[in-house]
Image (cartoon, rainbow, N blue to C red; front, side, top):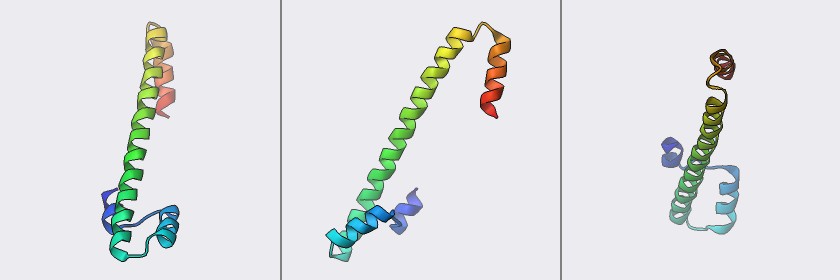
Length: 81
C-alpha cells in the first residue's frame, strides 16, 4: 500500500479527476497522495468492519453449537477449505 502512495500510482477515477480539476503538477501529486491515503484508510476500515461482523457471527455459532463438538469441528474444517 505504501509503495502505491510513494510512487503516486492511482486509480483510473483519481487520474480522471486530477486531469480535469488540477492543473499544477505540485498540487496534482499532493492531491493524488491525499486521495490515495483516504482510499486506503477507507479500505482498511471496511476490512475491519467486515472482520468484526464475521467474528460476531462466528461467536454466535460457537455459543449456539459449541457444545456439539463434532458439528463444530466439521464446520471449522469446512470454513478452512
